[in-house]
Amino acid sequence: MCHEQMDVEFGIALSHVCRTWREHVLAMPLLWNHLKVDQPNPRWAQVAAQLERSDQAPLDISIHNCAFRKSAIPRVRELMRLILPHLNRWRSLSLLYLPYKIKRIIWDNIRGKSAPLLKQIRMGPGLDRMSGGRTQCSWNARNILDGFQNLEDVEWAYMGKSHKSVPTFIKLRRLIVPLGTLKLSNIPFVHLIRQILTDSPTLETLEIFNGPLNQEESTNAVDGLDLPLLTHHTLRELRIEGGDRIVRIRSAIVRSLVLPKLQRFADGYHYLDALDLSSCKTIAKENSLPALRALSITGDLEYRAPSFHASKPFLPAAIHNLVKLRVLTLSDINFDSRRWLPNLGSSCPHLRWLLIIYCVGYDIPSIRAIVKNRIDNDEMTPLDHLVIEPDEDAPSECKVYPADQEWFSSVLDFKFHDDRWYIYGRTPAVWQLGDARFDRQSGTFTQYQIRLR
Image 1 (cartoon, rainbow, N blue to C red):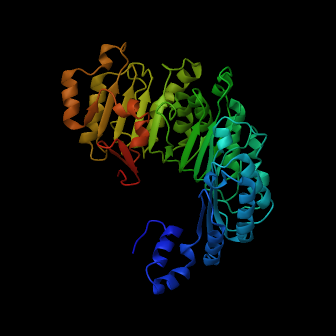
Image 2: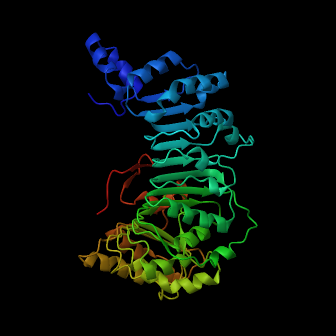
């Protein structure tokens, strides 16, 4: 027999097959250790029976708002009466769409207590905030979770404006701070991320949202921010989001970090995934992102900041250092008559996708040479996918004419633009990192099925 998740419903189904099966099923604690409280009318006797049948197995507890639409306070108190004695067995806790008053009772009951097995906590936004309601809560996660030092996976919303309440723990491997949780100005947001990485040396995934930001706040201070390099040895996935100016803020953060294990900047819109040219200096001089699989760089046609022009000479060397890169998007960059065009014919040996969007200062023969050199060189992986999309006002040498289009199409998948860039709102850097496959018929994406070699 096979079942994707050995949950309670599965255990109940097996227990009704026959008397012999029932005896065996009731004696298997791992069939009963996933406790879901998500019914409009919770059956407390069934919850108590399930807790008894789970014996000493670690408990995974999920509590949903559906159970508290009526008689909310008496119900949550009854629930805590049943599960609190088993706190030493809690392995994960999910609080889904619960209003503030329910979460307040739950946290007040466990605050300051020890839960040595607790590895995962997920607390998303409550219905009161999602519907625009206001509460006077100010969640201080560090105070609430002080007794849970073995946490490895935390999703924590509803913290108010104080970045000091972001939970950071020595064993933490994954931290999600959802949209609407933080409302920091630019410089404190940069320092917050550095502090999280300092406090959590084993962190592998960090997703953090900031905003909505003050649209009048200037990013000039961020553009000129010069911070000492910080090395984090385990981070593999980094997602930093927070409004229209997040590219410049993200770049200020990344250029102050050395991340030898980082593979990707996680899901987001193509614009929001990008780094700007100012990040190239650190990548070039410190080899700060040697394991990166996908990168989108936006340039000085989008922003006129002088620091971008000063950083442009580091672009070729930065790309040369990305030896594991599979996908590269270059947008809004002036390559100055190919002067700063990366030599992709002999670098990035695993590159499969190349997208040149709204750039100038290159010509089509140079791009043809890149494609041909990769085909002819046995040490290079030939390109699979090429997009060249110049702006309408771009010089003629940046545009692909029928003869070149025919040649490109004979050796790879060539497009004047990538439809997914617009239709699905995701950067191709996310579509084919090597751990995902795009299904053209369904328009969806199956993750973790293949790895590009």
